[in-house]
Amino acid sequence: MPKPIVCLSAILCQFCEAFRSCFSKRQWRYFVIVLLGLIECEQRRTLSGLLANIGERVSLSGLSRFFHRWKWQTEEVARIWLGRFRQQLQAKVEAEHQRQEAEREKRRGRPKKTVVTGYLIFDDSVHIKPRGRKMEGLGRHYSSTEQRVVTGHSLLTGLYVLLGRRCPLQPRLYRQQSVCQAEKVPFQSKVDLVIDEIEHFEAAEGTQTHVLIDIWFHCKAVRKAAQGRGWEVSGGLKSNRKMRLINPDGTRRWITLAEYAARLQPEDWQEANWPSQQGGQKVYVHSLRTHIRKLGPVLLLITCQDVHSPTKSIRYWGSTLLEADAQTVIDILAIRWSIEVFFEDVKDLLGSDHYQLMTAEAVLRFWTLIFCLACFLEEQQASQDHLATWGDARRAIQQEHQRNLLSWLQTQFQAGLTTQQIGVRLSLSSC
Image 1 (tube, rainbow, N blue to C red):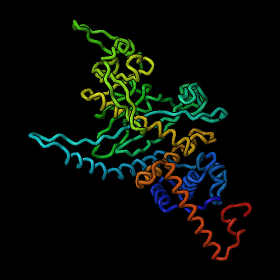
Image 2: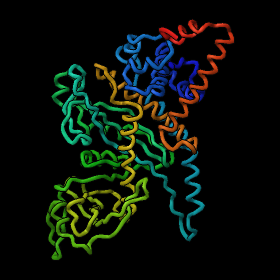
Image 3: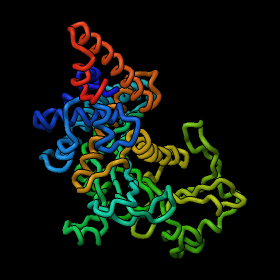
Image 4: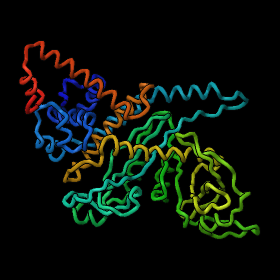
């Protein structure tokens, strides 16, 4: 049964209030309707699908105008949810500093500073739209899920991970240069978008930041932008990147990472543990402090599953943590998987690829509200121990909405309304 706004849970209502300044009175009502629809909708999250689950007198054209025409800024919405995240984590950051101080070994000299690290992870995800011929921003992108080039939109974003909590950055739409020329908009590469986020990102107070990237973003420009802010960088490396090798006689030459890995013997590897939700996976790692061409000093890590045939599962990693041990860097690299889980959740649970919107601005606005709801579910999951996933948090809110609906219906019947009158209030054609 469609749920009217009066059935909105108190906690979701409080969350929506935080964003009231981003919208006019009429726009804010549609904002609440969209979030409520995303929680209640079990089918595809098209505009029609969202409205089918809302018992309010709003039209499809009105909801379309909210996404396409009305003036509101996605940047302001993202700024508020990031501010909430930093505020909520501030007490935990301070508590972590105090915990480290209490456990710090007492010795002579100036005590070592306590460090709380937040991880800023960047990646992109392709939203396939094979029939969206008239949609703005469509391009031909490689999908790692489909393992082929597909037609769709490329969603690029960052994910801020701090003390076990996740918070997405503002979503960005990457458009290829040919698409930008056709649509007459300025072109920004994926690297340009990541650098812009790095330069403007505001971390939680009292923390350090570590940027985690995959092989497509691990370049000199991104590293320079991060190190310019005093941040560390770790991420994957392509096998054809060249490293500096120092020969026994002191001479130096450049060889590819693949060439270097081919020379390794079984005794050159050491056993390590790659963290995962299943308890970890055994891997073998070879680490070396070296120079990578166009990157500079790097702690190089090479990992594989089998030291006797490493080429089948070999991967290359680089980090600016030059003095760290291999296991420490592996523990950090494993955190990058958080953004893969995030993309999977927003697609499968919230339907970030269900839209049928024509303009690029409308698509960005849809993604922004998806991310906004994701922040709400993350808050609920973190605040209640029995909620293990976003899905659990969403079902708990749905159950509260159902109870609120029953209470509302009881109140309407006690007030003397007929089923037909109540049906009209729920925007039903019949009851």
